Image 1 (cartoon, rainbow, N blue to C red):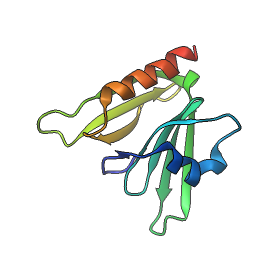
Image 2 (cartoon, helix red, strand yellow; image 1 turned 135 degrees about the vertical axis):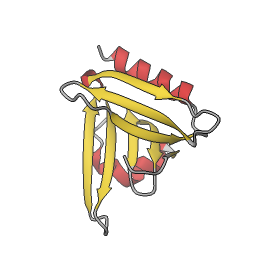
Image 3 (cartoon, rainbow, N blue to C red; image 1 turned 60 degrees about the horizontal axis):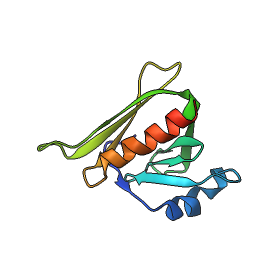
Amino acid sequence: MGLFSSHEVEPDEIRDKFGHALIAGEEVLAAFRSLRDTAFLTNYRFVLVDVQGLTGTKVSFQSVPYRSITRFAVESAGTFDLDSDLAIWVSGNPQPLTLKVSRNADPAAIQRLLAELVLAKR
């Protein structure tokens, strides 16, 4: 998702902007946004919103239900790293979905949330 790291945004901001993509009872639990792209976790799925093209009129929504996630990794930012990394492997795809997250985000909280969502859906 993009070249630039994402920063955390409030779930209300995601509901306002992407509420049309949410189903009844779906809650945004965590969200991250880079210059153009957005990723968010709900109580049902992980969503990547990829804004494409120069004008940004073409938008791709990739929705991954937690039951399709086979593994995930969260790497904290080191001394010389600018950001943390999140990688999510989806069944049937050998390459992970990757997301660079601002070093200000809490990697332990992201790890815990993903563990709860992925393992609880098994």
